[in-house]
Image (cartoon, rainbow, N blue to C red; front, side, top):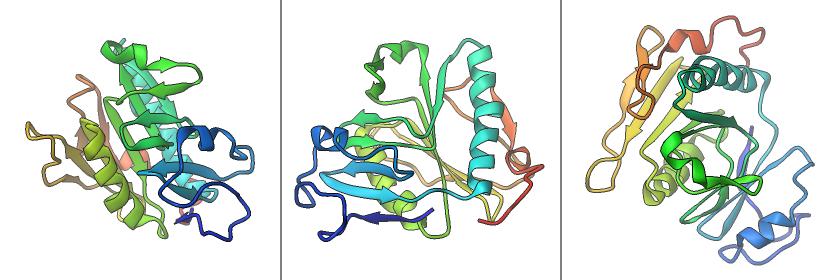
Length: 203
C-alpha cells in the first residue's frame, strides 16, 4: 500500500491542498480501490494494500474485535469506514473499536467522534504516514489508544494518551508478547497470532 498527498495534477479534482472538507470527501470515487483521507484539510490517497496486510487485518478483527464484541464491550469495524474527528474529515483506519459508552457516534453510515482504539498496519511505503502524520492527528483528536502493527518486524507499538493529552512513548510488543488495551478490559492477544498462518507474507 502506498500513501501520498494528492498532487495538483492528479486525476481526482477538488479544492487546493489544505482546503479539503468532508463535503469534498463525499464526492470522491470511493469505489475505485483507493482509500481517501483528509487530515488538516489535506487529501491523502492510499492504494490497495497487500494480501499480508489484509490477512493481519482479518486477524485483528477476529482476535480482538470479535472477542471484544462477544464480551459485550462495544463494536469493531475495519477499513474502509469513515471516521470523522477534529482535524480528520475523515480518516479510514485499518481497525477501529468503539466502546458502548460512545455508541452514539455510530450513525449515518460513518463514525462521528473519537473511537476508543485505532489500529494501523504499516506498509513499507507508508511508515512515515502512520508514525508521524496519523500519530499527530490521532493525538490532536484525543484517541485514547493507537496501535501500529509492523508486519516485517512482527511487532506492535502501542501509544496511550496521557493526562496532558499527549501520547507517551510507545510500549513495544514483539511476537512473543501479549497485547492488551485499557479500553478493552479482559481482551488479550498474543502478537505472534496476528501473523500466524498467513499464506503470503510479502509486505
